[in-house]
Image (cartoon, rainbow, N blue to C red; front, top):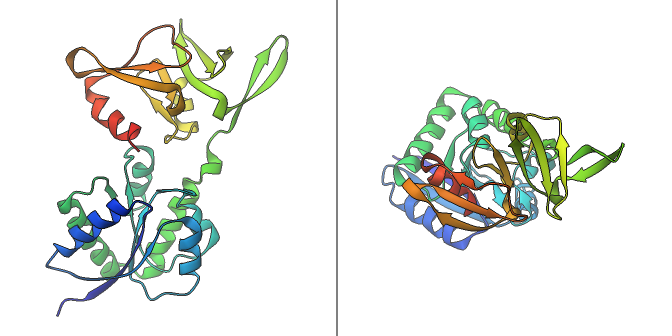
Length: 258
């Protein structure tokens, strides 16, 4: 007899919930019961606090009231989690290292089946506390508070604090790295762009190419370019074209649509 898997879905998009339920119903090899659907961090924390009898949670990383990793900081999650996300770079590297499952949106049916099988495999080979401990470690690694929130820059023989939220983009010019603010102000900073890419929230900043690390809020238009490449039009206007390569174009579009 097929084991019944009691599932909770944490997702703020009704369409995404419908797609996941539809794909789960197609997995004839497994038997599922969806016992809860939560749409926010607060709703999830309240529901999990009621000590529900749940086997597996499908958890969207980005919810309307913040990062779902905050759930792990507020309450003990009682079961393994399969993360869902539209972003597939920084976070997913951490998931792989910690053996935590994830699904990219839009969810591929084959990937869904593989993830469920992986959950069952872990359940047989590990005790539940071991699986949950790994998830909690991922949550600690990716807490938003660990991203850079400000810069200290030189300004007229003094120091000035710049909030990351006010940064339009960072770029390399003549072997130096500059920070350009949304109001047009520009500052020379003593950083490597590769290091800044790791320090800034990857949901908000995208490494368009070797020269530019751009804020989501600075991009106002995207134009097709030769050979499958893209040109990003940013505010304030950049000193040169911000071009996304053909190889990164699909990944950028997924990032931009998240």
